[in-house]
Amino acid sequence: MAINRRLSTDLDFEEVLEQQQRIRVFQNNQLIDASSLVVRFDDSLIVTQSGVSDIAYHNRKECEFFVLRKR
Image (cartoon, rainbow, N blue to C red; front, top):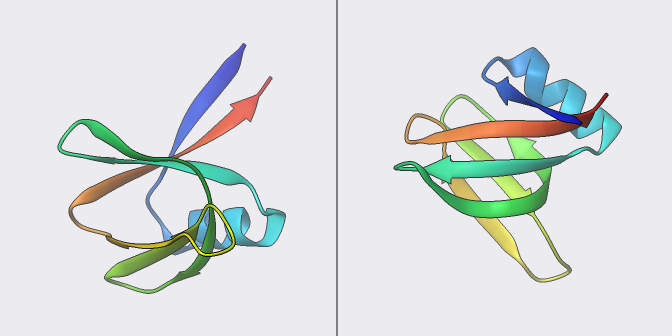
């Protein structure tokens, strides 16, 4: 069974970035990004990449970020 862990702090995003874990992004209770890698982040923006030319910019305050971990 898998566990969803919410990402909220800079340490959370650093860990995901270093370990190259895929994340899910929700906005207004809708899944907008299903399986992406965090490329870059700062106080207001999270940049994700799901493919070679598929880069997305997510507002950190408007979105929720989760990493799916296996038990």
